[in-house]
Amino acid sequence: MHHRGAIRWHFLIYFLLLRTRSFVALLFFSLTSFWSGSAVIAFQSVSSRWPCLFFVRLNSYHGYSWQPRIPVVPLSPLFSSSSTSSSPPPVMTFKPPSLTEITVTPDLYDAVRIYAMSDLHVDYRKNLELFQYWCSRPASGNSLSSLALEQEKSDRIYSILLIPGDIASNPANFKAVLAATRRRFHATFIVAGNHDLWVSNSLADQGVVTSIDKLAWIHQVAEGNGDEPEGEEDTEDGVGGKEEEGGWSEEGKEGGPGVPGRRGESEGDWSGTPEPSANPGGSRAAHLPISPSSSSSRRGKVFTGPVRFHTPRGERLLILPLLSWYHASWDTEPDLPAEVVADLYEGRPTFEQRWADFRCCKWPEEVLQDREDFVSLQTEKQELAVWFARQNEIFLADTRVRGEGPPAEKTTVISFSHFLPREELCPEKRFLLEPMLPKVIGSTPLRKQVEALRPDLHVFGHTHIPIDLTVQGIRYLQWPLGSVGEQSRQTYEMGRRGPVLVFDEERGGLVGTIPTRWGAHYREAARNVLETELAPWVKKYWERK
Image (cartoon, rainbow, N blue to C red; front, side, top):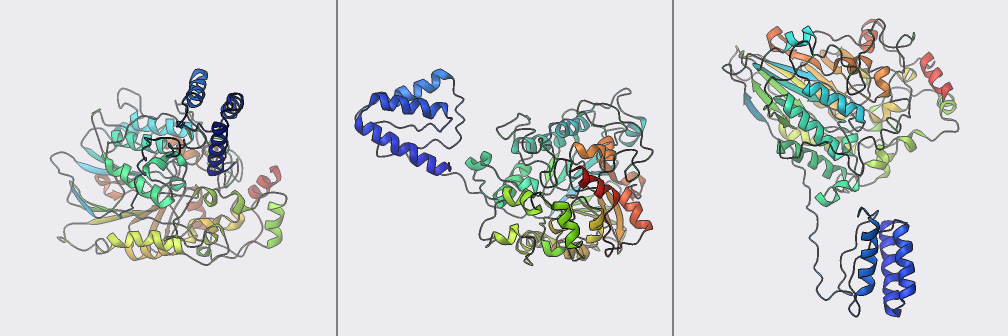
């Protein structure tokens, strides 16, 4: 029954029973309401107090957890002569961040290093444990590889982490990641992904009703910089909730939209990769590229907006988190033939029915006037994509010009987003487990902003398909952790290595090309969007289904 309908139904029955003064009927209704798990409705009768007291004491005696499925109804003036009105929840307001200037002084630090990893998905318990392991592993003795000890051997390295979205949908898990990064990195940059903007009733008392409210909450928690609790307690939604049951529910239980090549298979992924070693998170953590500071008191900051760093070696470093959202019209490449797609989905729910964003994201009318424009893959509208891109424009006016300052200063620009700016960053449809995936991964307004900025590196996420590729003079990188299942397939190397080093001031700036299967493929082979023959691993995947 709908929550409001249940409340009205209980309210009416109690009112009638109180009017009739039927003890037996009231007792029976109280017992059936309690055992069915219905909400407790607290009230006080004007003429008699014992019915209410008996009902509440009965629940207390049984040890009810007081976590009703629907909200407790506030005292009604009809039944209480001294009722008080509860204060409404606060209203969340999203305010785009502005540019920040930070000087990393040479008397405290020798150099700056930047790491990146997208799609942490720590609603999987194993992913949360693995990420906390990466952030808390002590750098002493032989606990880390010699490579890690060489890379970060003292507190005189100013370390930065970029997380291009999809940290967690659960608020407690989201906060746990921020707490871990603050202990490990001097600065962490985040941008919201689609999973981050899923809305549940867990934050309703803080005014989070829509996905824009959730975006405001994310920025508020990040800007608190240590005010939130550091615990990782499970909540009602909890660790290992909706996602623990089956990976990305949009793409099915096999683990996301990438290529399912298991280790050792010909279509597979990481030929010659060594066997993984165990760690507390249950995933791979050999040869970690990062090690924590020897100082346990480090409290780094989390940023959601642009920051210009003045580095110890006289360089300027500009980091730009770009908000974005996808729209179906971004995909301009030919679809697979209708008969091919029909065979794949025969007897199964449609892609729209399985894509969880269409159920878990809620948009206010001032952002999206017609919900059908959001849940349809045929619409040409870009309302959401335009709204998110517009939030970036507020600060991009301050950061487009890169030639300011003394000639001796070099400016390195690194931007990042959750969604894809270019179609070339996703394999052709015939290679994808979900041929409809390109309808929900990219943004044309985002592409225009990235092309106007022309960063030295743009990091992104969302598809869980690792790639390092330069397109029209701009280098793009995706390094996702992904689901637990994907860490035995396309994100095996990410789960084994952890966040990847992308910038090292001691070694001249941006690191060289990072080996990825699809990056290597597109450096050798031309993109062919007219080919419609499904890849062997796609056929095998759907045959198993």
